[in-house]
Length: 291
Image 1 (cartoon, rainbow, N blue to C red):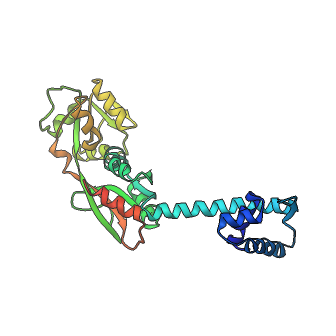
Image 2 (cartoon, rainbow, N blue to C red):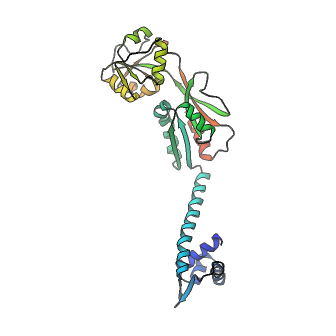
C-alpha cells in the first residue's frame, strides 16, 4: 500500500465519483479506478460500490478512509514541520544558570523572538554541572553559565562565547547616602545583612571575603525577596549586578561597590563543536552574540 494510493482513495471518497476525482487529481478516470481496484486486491475486501450515479464506501472503505485521513494528516503535518525547520523555525533548546536566565537572556532573546516568530525557545534553568552534562549529551543546544573573568566554568569540545561581565554589588534602599562609593569589607561585615541562603553563590563570595560565616538579620530564598526586603529598609544586601541593574536604574534601589568581594565574573555561552546544526540554532547563536 502506497501513500499515493491512499491520497487517491481519499479524494474518491470525497468526490463520490471516479470522474470528479480524476478532475481534481488531474489524471484520467481509468487511472483513478485502477488505483482503487489495486487497493481492493491488496486488502482483499471491496472498498466502494456503485449507488445510482455515485459511489459509496463499504464498511471496509469507511474504515480505510478513517485510518487514511489520520495517516495523511500526520504526513502533511510532518511536511509542514520540516518546511518550517528548513526555513529557520522549530525548537531551540537553551540551558542557563539562574542569574543569566532571569536577568540577561530575556533582553537578548526578545529581538530574536520578534525576528524569528516560528522558533520555539525552550529554556531550562540548571546549575553549571547539570548544564555541562546536558550539553555534552545533546539534550540542549546552547548553554549559558557564569565563570571567572579569564576561565570558563568548564572546558571540552565546545565553542565558547562571552556575553558580558557581572560583579557583586552592595544593595541599599533607594536614595541611601552610602550608595555610589567603595565599602570596606569591615564596613560591610558590620551592616545588618539581608542575604540569600548559605549555599548561594553570593553568600559563598561574602563568606570568603569576610573570612567567617556571616550572620544575616534576614535570610531569603530568592533574589527578588532580598531586593524587596532591602527596599523596605530591613538591611543591606549583596547581590549580582545583573540582578539589580533594572531596579537601580529605575531608582527602586541604590548600590555600592566593595573591592574585597572580588573581581568580575564573565557570562559564557557554549555549544558543541561536533554538532550538525539546524538553521534556527545557527540563527540563535548569531543573535545571542550580536548585542
